[in-house]
Amino acid sequence: QLVESGGGLVQAGDSLRLSCAASGLTFSRYAMGWFRQAPGKEREFVASVSWNNGGTYYADSVKGRFTISRDNAKNTVYLQMNSLKPEYTAIYYCAADPRFGRVVDFRGFWGQGTQVTVSS
Image 1 (cartoon, rainbow, N blue to C red):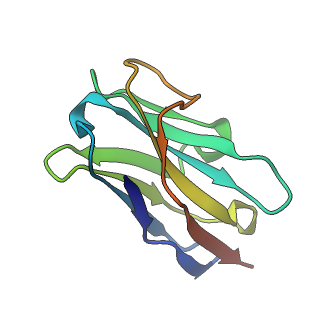
Image 2 (image 1 turned 180 degrees about the vertical axis):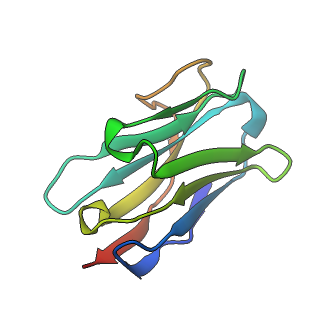
């Protein structure tokens, strides 16, 4: 089970940190990722972190603004989002995939999502 938290309503330029707590899986052996789905659009990849070497991967649209990290002791993955823009408004989903290395097309478990709204 994946449970996201930390979403909310913020103003453009603000920062927000999302968390995703995992249970029922061997967290340290799963790649973890974040996706988002804006109204009327398809879900898109945001960022991921591998389980075998800690490598991080980002969508071009968020490079330099977002940072993904994981705490295996807490079975939690985070997404630090800085300098938020209105176009980042979306439901943000957490995902887990057992493959190693760079994973951007997650095929494992998904959370229910948390709403992030950025006002201008």
